[in-house]
Length: 250
Image 1: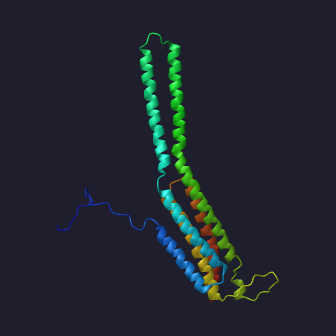
Image 2: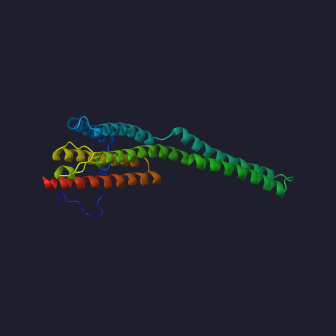
Image 3: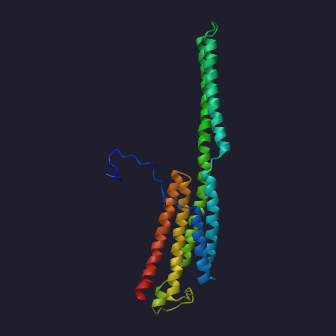
């Protein structure tokens, strides 16, 4: 049949290219910039705008860090391979020396053992140096990623502080104000937009954190990113509870 392709044994002409499977750091930063512009238009004098400005700077710095993490550190890699070459050369020299001295009649068993032990000690020491340098690149990248993730975690808590006192109950019902009560001069619509902006910022914090996993596969970084995602999800859930209350009363 024309156009018919058998199911079994069929070989595709080319592997399908993955689409929409990776986060684009440029678009994430552009989304943060767009959110900052929206907040500035509706709440130009709010502290939330300053937090979003700081989030935008953090995203730009994280983008540079992520690009740096994705590149190899050639100095450490050259050092790593140089040490491997030294191990091979040391092993070759040790075996060659043993073979030459083994042909000599003056070499006793004790001398042969001492020569072998010295060669093995050199190889062990160089192997330990290779092991240290081999993991050094991953440790350097992990440390830089953890600093960025700690910064994002702190911003998530700051965002939560800004929505903490935005209680919809103070707008919907009559309540007795005290001298320490926070001032809320917002309509129900403005409060919903304010809370929605907080939720969007928390979502973007988790997306920027997830960007680090695309350049670095490390268990510690994965655990930190998962922690940030759980944190932002829990905080956003509290915000949407307030939004649902406001929507139910309109």
